[in-house]
Length: 155
Image (tube, helix red, strand yellow):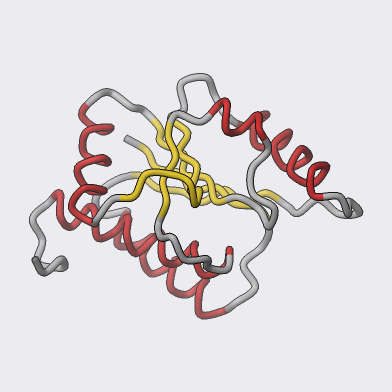
């Protein structure tokens, strides 16, 4: 199964970019993974219009058989072992590509909620979009170490 992590806007914090680049290399030992970075839409001041413009770009790139997971505060919450189980089940049930989408500053357009196959919450706390990229990458790496019985996860 291929994993893609999609987000809007460039990463401008060096430490987050270095961190998720490190985790990308680690995750690639287990599965194919890529990041898709959508450029920010300029000149739009209304949140609804911003979300719609972002959704247009995302929906144009999604394929019908892509399994889309929104990283959303209202999504399911898992501990690390449960998240690993979620990933493993998708891989064994012939999911070709799983797309994890980190929303923009205003969240997701309703069309993305309708298209999504699942929603996942990393925490009830609020994190910057820059930092959540790194947090998610670490949790994805942790999931693969759990699946493969590596000692990274201490439980």
